[in-house]
Image (cartoon, rainbow over all chains, first blue to last red; front, side, top):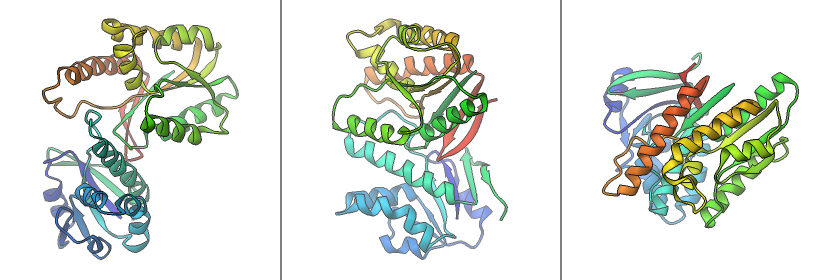
Length: 131
Length: 178
């Protein structure tokens, strides 16, 4: 598993396309829930989580997502926005959403062999292990 | 030594800070170990958060010191020389000082700065957890803007005092100041 993270509109997908050529990127904003377990890469992963959370039983599905991904699609490349660095949202759902993304990504980053953080299109590896 | 730990929501900064203080204390042999809790227990969500943090540090030898406001007095009254303190977290402390009846209000920045100085004068090691609320516009809310400004200034002052500043990104420590 690998992750590409950073703020919104920092060129994460473009960077990932150069770094990982040939990968077809699933879009977390539009894909079907099951597709994440068979794709090679997903972008807008935070949006995938938000869409999961608004569904019936979404909280439970979200709590299992990291574990499920690790067991069912351990080679996936995940692109996500870091959404946890703003003011604490007034809306309770937004607070829960943002913390859930953090918890899931923390678990996935722990499993990942490589995590790159993209700032203004420039990537920096914050985690790199022997592949 | 003063270690400042920052990070976004759900980033694993608390777990990192806790491991850090336990490791530092283990390396020194002994000394009291304090958890300085700043969160005001109001509302179900906050109570659940407090509970989750309590569970996380249960059985690890922490003495919990409740400190809503007045970190300096708290340090002088409760902390022993040569001890280890984990402060969690500076954003709650800032909100308490700004908004609580017994808070420092306009003097929030200075109160927290003096508080940290007092804590550092008695403790051997302090690890303080803070967070980053700066990467977003506060919208039309003057209050949000004020909080962002005061808290940003406090974080900058803390980082200046700190020997080491680490941002925790999804559980990964990224060095800000070595």
